Length: 231
Image (cartoon, rainbow, N blue to C red; front, side, top):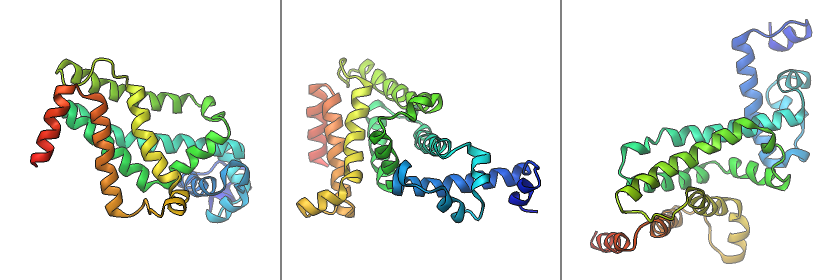
């Protein structure tokens, strides 16, 4: 018996089937919301993509806005989970910072749907994220991670003492985000395809150099530049 038939009979779906159905709905909804935003997304389209019915979506998520918030929560949980797997505490501060920068660049490049979801929520003044304690807790983790890397670098006297982790997060995220969110207008205006692998590699090096230049002590910057030229 399908989950839909269970629902029609007034029975709660069996747990394995329920979780599969829930995940399928979230995957389809992520595509729909990323493509059309909250207002333009259609629950009927999400139901059609998952071979289910609207009432099943409302059964799991309560409403269209409830589904949208669940998609946002899963999207943020995904990137934060991968960040946690970087194990930055096992690397020296400069290498840890480099790894985080490169990860953020690669993740945003590979997940344009995440960028579109965040852009959409910004047009709504982040009112749904503001309701989610889980998203706010999740995003504190990246600041905690950055603070740990910076604090270790300050103790080792390779990072400036006045560097703030939120500022560094903004510096990294803004460049990575812009390359994806504005790639079509940028290509039209300047004739540069930001998805070109050669340009991606150059921009990743450029961002890494810019962030390290911003956080490192002057003497350490000069040593890093000399070593880089020698290589």
